[in-house]
Image (tube, rainbow, N blue to C red; front, side, top):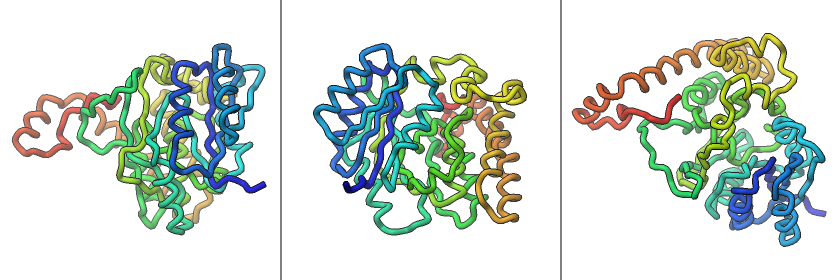
Length: 315
């Protein structure tokens, strides 16, 4: 049997509220050569019934279910382990995408550059009712695309730009994904982007084709502390990791990502330096964005420089 060009992995637990919309948006794509792997982590709501109903109607769906909740990390890893496509895409139970998203991303890969690790599309944020949330900031957060020749330059760009991390819901070359660290650490989306960027190029489709839903049950919204996030992603985290302050823990994870990727000695050294220095500098910049709003608003009125617009979307 011919293997699909693309595997889509959708891990889910109790996702009945938004799951049908997510599945409709994936199955309605004008690129059809894919398998959709739904891994149900022991849901106790109507998730199973929804998935089985969709699977009966579309043979591209593979529905697998665990009898118990084995954790978010296990579920994200599982959809990769059972996938068969040359390319892979993570999908969330609560997000949506426009019908041309997969085709536009795959067209970039089909150009033939084997060094491209990830292709993603621009995104918009939507609320619980799928209404677009107006963008309030001017800086190009999450535009992590980079074709720089050296890994350390690509890494610096990604660390500086990654915020909501939705680029990791783009299409990934599966061989690159399998060389990355297994999913399962705090800010796992940032780390995956960083590792893919060190391995190859990240390209952007300059069209809004992905819809990131913001709601009260989002991981960061529903979980109150960084320690709880860490436990959610990595229940086996060591004591030292649990004791580290969040921003230090992020640097620590970037350093581990650099150490994991196969690089020349010089690039390894340069990437380690970038991983240690760039996050604190970025934190200072974020702090300036959240504390200098009135001043920058006035400067923007005088200069018309959009990047000076006060941001309500940074932590």
